[in-house]
Image (cartoon, rainbow, N blue to C red; front, side):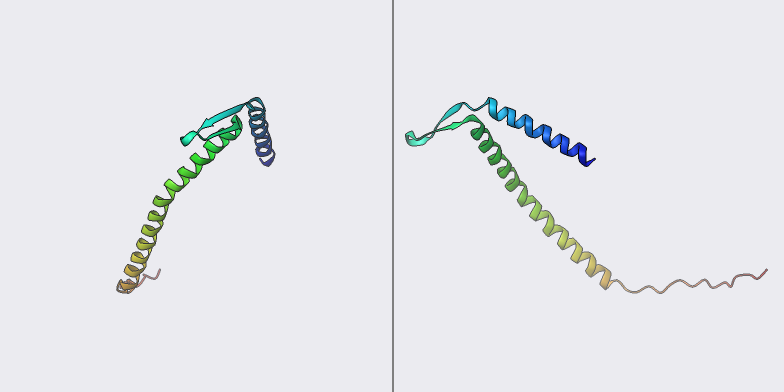
Length: 100
């Protein structure tokens, strides 16, 4: 299984490397106030992908923290309910087993 994963990783690497080599043309980015950058297309694509990944991660982070707080609250509530529950004695069978 490890060999298959390494083969897939190498295949993905070579596909992305080939994509980067084919798209090495310069791209001019125009910003506000007349600012311009001239970068290879691969860097622009990588920067946009990275920005999207970071934005998606930070958007998910808030709900993840909220869920962790809720889980902690529910665990404390369950522990308190377990601690406050009165002890119930074990039920004893009143009939003695019959001897054969």
